[in-house]
Length: 261
Image (cartoon, rainbow, N blue to C red):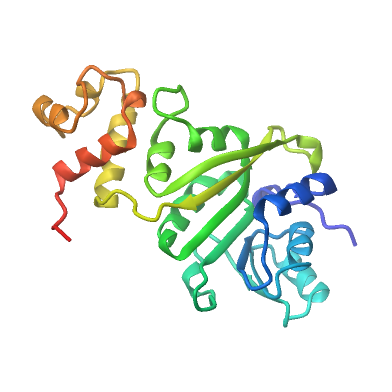
């Protein structure tokens, strides 16, 4: 029986075999990988990965799809976690000694940003992440300082990851086709991210980009003096999108200094 994609779950099922093989090639799975897929849907990507990976985990919210996966795959090969990926504790997935978690998925576009921030909490336990996302979102994630798309998402994710847009996927590769282009992104957690308090950095970045047409001095008025902005290595007349990740971290450390290691 054909599964009808549900709008409320943001379902668009990838079916293009060339795209599927290109994603698998980019992921380069190994037999003993601790692999977890978010939103396996009808199992097109799952099927590809399971040809190599001995044992996989998937997180799926749609109960009909959970039942379908249970009928299709042996529990010895596939562990299904029925529930919301936004609430799922990814650190509970067993990982072999000397290995880290590998996360993949065609993420529902309506929850992509909060899901990326949720996963950032376990970045030290992750080897890499490969996701299908709206192309516009991936461009914002990977944007360099100075570009029009560099913003809050860019800073907060680049603080934790090396991010690269791998390739673009057209709407016709999906059923039903989304109204936008998609892209595959690779996210590799940084071995040594710059030290700062994450909540403080989030607050600084949110305030800086709340009025992105203004200069940084005006955006951060009430949070930092002009002298502090200069101390962080920033020209007070710069606009928020031209200030780099290191400089935002320096501001966060001025606001809430961390104890020495």
